Amino acid sequence: MHKPFQPPPRLLMGPGPSNVAPSVLQAMSAPLLGHLDPVFVKMMDEIKAMLREVFLTQNEMTFPVSGTGSAGMEFCFVNLLEPGDEAVIGVNGVFGNRMVDVAERCGAKVTKVEAPWGRIIEPGQMAAALKDRRPKLVAIVHAETSTGALTPVEEISRLAHEAGALFVLDTVTSLGGCPVRVDEWKIDAVYSGTQKCLSCPPGLAPVSLSPRALETATRRKTKVQSWYLDVNLLAAYWGQERVYHHTAPISMNYALHEALRLVLEEGLESRWKRHERMHGLLRKGIEALGLSIASQQGHQLWQLNSIAVPDGVDEAAVRKKFLSDYNIEIGAGLGPLKGKIWRVGLMGDTATEPNVAKFLDVFAHILKH
Ligand SMILES: Cc1ncc(COP(=O)(O)O)c(C=O)c1O
Image (cartoon, rainbow, N blue to C red):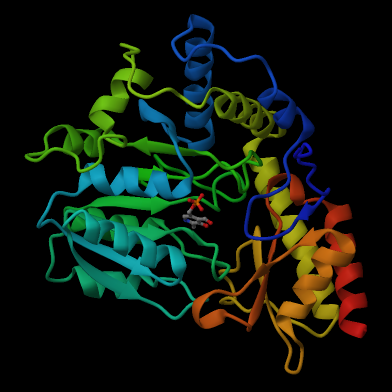
């Protein structure tokens, strides 16, 4: 006979998922409702309203796609791109590359604007790429979780619109942890994930489309390549009609409702400030240990800190010790940064003073021994 699964009590300080408030876990164990039950439908409306507050947008087409952050990414590209369309995509880490892969699978001709991993996409690079191009869309990753760099959005959004393009932004790691202003920054399509700074388990991808992006999706010449992610069909379930499309993950939506409620109870500005403060404490602590943050000065993420591995230290052995002896998960470097950085997440509920202090204590101890 198999025994019931009992996970150990980990402190999640990696690139996500982050720790989750007890009330979010409790929400997931509430009795199920049918996905067309009027009580569930009312809760869906509240989720949409809260997501609009968190994204700082008036966009009607704002809801959680069933699936993780990557489903949100695919949702944006499959709905906006048709075969033969041009796309310009910033690549400065894993997730820029993933966007390129997804856009190419939609049949788009992709131009990459590349920056070294750990650095931001500079507006000047984007301006150069858009000089002689009129792409259908321009896309960048706001917070590159693989490197810890935060690319400023507004100037690139302006350049994209000047070139007649839609502007798509990945906010999987930024939403809830630092400013994301969808309407003010004129973002046409934005997606996120639940498991980072919203502190909810992974499983839903909040998305929002501007009226212009929605019109692009509804006026396509070709069918959206994905039935599951077609906004024209999803709109009938998340909009007024409430027509069955797929069975919504009921308990995940309960969890997101509670997580968003907690985000708004804390207040967006206070939440951003908390993430900034925790990053400051962590940075001070690691500098006192003679170490430094590896991503570009002036553009370092608060919620994901990439710490440069000092010469002669076995990066993987340190992570292993954190997990096996202290129940703390931290992340490894990926791609060209493999073995060169640790990625320490301070996202959502994980971003507290006691957690930062505990990490620094354990880190100092491990490095010494
Ligand atoms: C910036 C960014 N984009 C997209 C994704 C993909 O999200 P998921 O792993 O939830 O599918 C991630 C996940 O870490 C991410 O950090």
